[in-house]
Length: 340
Image (cartoon, rainbow, N blue to C red; front, side, top):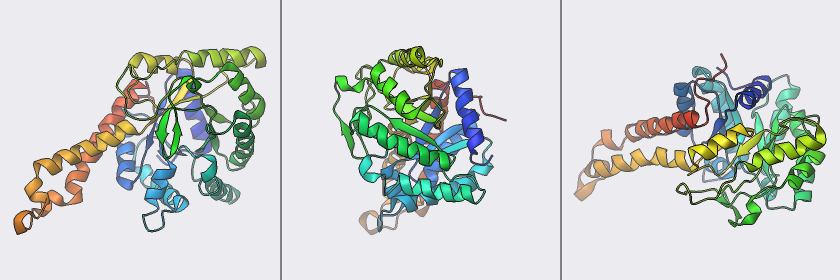
């Protein structure tokens, strides 16, 4: 199927909300990790989201120029072609973008899609993320209003992060402390600034103790039940049941119970990066260690081309990452839910 149209993406999110499941959002940094994501979704018979962070886009732009827009556009264009060979709907998204990178990433990408829409085409990406969690909430929401209007003009959904996620991702760092929990007042201020759909659809990355990085279960204090408080607090004032489409950041190490509670309270998208990075790299490391003498020219020998050919270890990496994504689909209840 082709990359999701704006109408299909909205329907995907509506179905997830109604069915209390979520789409894994997989960070990719190459054509190979893109294919691993597409394969994982196809094998799980789940639609899904593929996303590119600022660091991933810089990597995709090549180390000579490190141009984020070039990297993101190039992989997105490639995705529009190759995704047609997979029997699932895929939405393209850009991950965390802080204030100092907006002019070099999200704003130019919004303009690319706006120009496409003006020509009668679909947008290049289906959603973009504005990470204003390092700003005051007032400044965060003021920029969010501007970006939401630009997104609507490009038929794109905006994702906003209104309060911090702990740990570090692509240079955005927050301490792990009591500030990692969004309050009902934060949610009310968000609804007042961005509306509840009438100004344009947005996804909300609220904080309930989320931390980016590698953690064993129990090392991070998640309170996904907090999302219900946010839904009910805003619903009580505005009269709209379950007003928010939530995003789950920092999900590595989460328990099955924590994930289930988050899904029951309105999470429709959950980011995966750390776990899929490891799944991709682990078989490569295994191949290199098991074939040490073959992949290196040891003691003047020539090695074994079949062992160091990137296709030899690359196929293992793709299969392993795809398998991890099928597990994510099962954890998030999206297995078998693809739109026909």
